[in-house]
Length: 537
Ligand SMILES: Cc1cc2nc3c(=O)[nH]c(=O)nc-3n(C[C@H](O)[C@H](O)[C@H](O)COP(=O)(O)OP(=O)(O)OC[C@H]3O[C@@H](n4cnc5c(N)ncnc54)[C@H](O)[C@@H]3O)c2cc1C
Image (cartoon, rainbow, N blue to C red; front, side, top):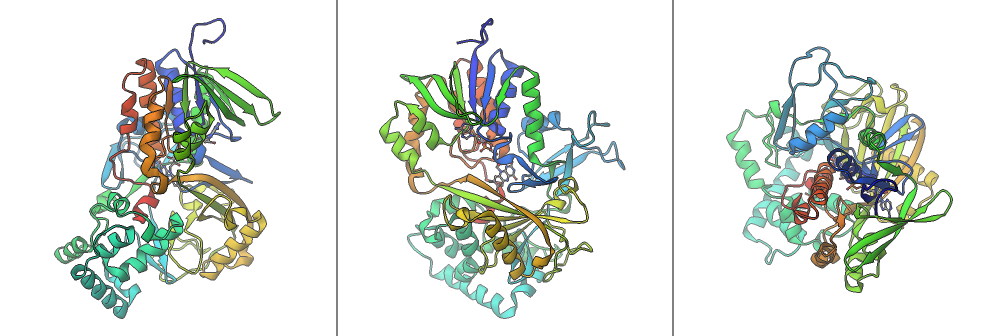
């Protein structure tokens, strides 16, 4: 198959998220293949899109732009340069994230629109628990001890000591894993409720290996040793990330939210001859043996279905959808893929006039009560909200009226459950009431609101995932099929991992299939760094 009148081959891409768009642009930059991207949503960006509600922009989850990969860091800056600091135009900028850092000098002047830039932002996120603020990551410092109180601190210490002498054996669940390392009391205080809120599964039903993979190096003993040997340090990072002041976490952030990056990329794809079709869903995939020959695409505007022949198919759609659409299906593989677990996610965007100055803020609060955090973990067991985003602190440009506070109240849920099915107005009312009940706002100060639902926000690693190897082995048999991306590979990708997988797929396509297995090596062993992972954590 080739474009009529030319011999350029066609790559169909399902999905215009970070993976699909990176693949499209790299194909155009590095090859003669023509990418045709089909995206079921009405906008690009996937989970990394920015939702614009009456001029107020929402980032679904809070997307920090930082990568250990120099390639990704350069790639992003090529699309959106870093805003140069007017005060120190030649000063290098250092950004740091989870003990990795990058230093660069931003472009002297930024061509194009002054909004087409990335900002350098400093992270502040805290834990809100017992109507008090705790440092995140949790620190063994005077403030934490003060918040907990002497009696509670003693009980935590005793419970930790007991766990060291009476270890749970065998250590089969995440609960066993956490109690053995932190003691029952600390586990129940800081891990249990939040983890169960996030995953909707009791910690006793999550495997211990899963914890081991995510909580490498986190231990009370090390934290205590560190605290005792460093009396002059302001606090100890229980994540052992050794945050020196010069390495305070700073990350890049597109001025108009993460979707701005992907909207810019989409424009480049279109300018360079690729096609992006929004509101088009891939609904069937034809194959001859282990070769994809065409896809059927439903135009959601008029209900018509078009058959699109292709030479290569890149899929960023969920693996369970991919395997069910591949005709004829492999029943064993389709059975496993159909049961792969996910966690879904809802955000209530609330525009408020002011906030209440809550608890022990210990940080400068604006005149209207807005705390300085990018986001706050809500650890309170009496509410369902998991995290609170304060969009003003990600980028002031996300907010239409700087005199207002634009909040994202994040809920972890399951598609179709009680929260998910709640009517939007009821959900907004419920979310506002929750925030009021923990003392953060007065509901009468709510000016406006909207609801965004994100299905399959988190591919989960329990349940049927143990058999995922069979799905991968089946998909690997296809010579011209490239599953990439977060749900595309059922892997906890951040944007950079999805981009690296897409780029590796493009290299393999250019090499006529060579190096295909390298795609699965991306983000296979790395430490997770999306926040939910470390909190699970
Ligand atoms: C709460 C949260 C916080 C996060 N924080 C960060 C962070 O701080 N930093 C970071 O880098 N990453 C973060 N991430 C991860 C980031 O959102 C993802 O890694 C990234 O969006 C994955 O890109 P992707 O292209 O692989 O998949 P997606 O973004 O899921 O894109 C896939 C696209 O495919 C489309 N699609 C699906 N099925 C079809 C079909 N049948 N036909 C056509 N189109 C289809 C979807 O509509 C979607 O647009 C976070 C994620 C969450 C949920």
